[in-house]
Amino acid sequence: MTVDFEIDENLAFVRDYVRAFARDTLRPLAREADEKGKLPTETIKQLGTFAGNRASIMPEENKGNGEKRSSIAAMMAVIGSEELAWGDPAVVLNIPGPGLAAPSIRAAGTPEQQKRFLDDIFNVDSGEPRFGALAVTEPQAGSDVSNVQTTAVQDGDEWVLNGTKMYCTNGARAEIVVVNATVDKSLGRQGQKFFVIEKGAPGFKVGKIEKKMGLTASETAELILDDCRIPFDNILGGAEALEPKGSGFKGTMKAFDSSRPSVAAMALGIGRAAFEYARDWVSSELPMNTSFPRKAAIEQKLGRMKRELDAARGLVWQAAWMADNKIPNSKEASMAKAYAPPAGLRACIGAIQIMGPEGYSKEHLVEKWFRDIKVYDIFEGTGQIQRVVISRKILGRLD
Ligand SMILES: Cc1cc2nc3c(=O)[nH]c(=O)nc-3n(C[C@H](O)[C@H](O)[C@H](O)COP(=O)(O)OP(=O)(O)OC[C@H]3O[C@@H](n4cnc5c(N)ncnc54)[C@H](O)[C@@H]3O)c2cc1C
Image (cartoon, rainbow, N blue to C red; front, top):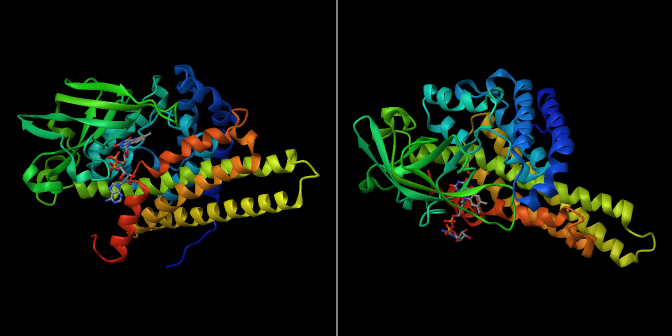
């Protein structure tokens, strides 16, 4: 296998566009969003317009309908994710769009469902900001997805869902929420199917909104399904999903293969933000008469931060490149996800260390990035779970 590290002019164009957006729009909103724990609706609408412009410069095949995705879609996603998180990881989660609903709808939805659920939500010209969300985690099921307790029972031309979902990003404001539920407990995880719940569905309730140490401007909600009724056609994969080999648990595990590299890229973006901030601070603020041992320690630390972040990018790009080239990449996606968040966290800690008390002060964003980054080692599968996936793949114990 060869990996080409040269990015073509399409990717470079998108990277530069997103980088400018991150620098000029996202970064200036970071501190206020963190302190207030949210963004004004007007700002969210403006973010939607920027996102719409971004969508309009992308090749046609990268928009909504996932039937014909371009051969650089995954690379575009990781390069864009790194830049956006560099701007601000919490503000980014306020950009309207399908969010984590998209990979699972693309992985398990029929072409008609991809069009129905995604085209509209990608269309930001329609006024109000619209979000999508993915709700998998439950009180007893996070890492162990197979233990999901939510049930879906067919009743005529409807499904009736019951259960509780936790920690759902953008769950309270989402127009569509993709949830997994079991249609047949006796089948274990093979009995799990994925469903799209549309806003306003009877029996769909929002529970508590989490208060968090980081990503404070990102909404994280509990969702309660209390005899929640949705149309039969909202099962991802359609009626065929109910056949023994129909899309379900495995289909959505496949979605992780495309979302994990992007989540890893976000951690990389936060780590890079901290590294660059510390580097610039050293250039402009470190007194000329700083002792030799301190200077040497700083140089060592900056070198290690840069080395680890570049290594993380290598793993992230490898996983994305494989996805674009239709090469199975579960192990590589997990390797990127296992490596980038701790590397990014070490970069944030390194930046605080280099800047000393200034790094701990709210005058600078490094303390915020330190709080924000930890969760990248938790959601989309914790670091421990990635390591389990990697070792099972190496030992051939996971198909
Ligand atoms: C800010 C935030 C946003 C989130 N957004 C979403 C979202 O949009 N949608 C969604 O569905 N979920 C979301 N989550 C939930 C997240 O994906 C889960 O918290 C995560 O998967 C861990 O699951 P858990 O909470 O059940 O923890 P547990 O699975 O109970 O894990 C607790 C600890 O035990 C470790 N552990 C568990 N099993 C093993 C094992 N076999 N080997 C070694 N260690 C193990 C874990 O690594 C972890 O450290 C979000 C969480 C947060 C904090």
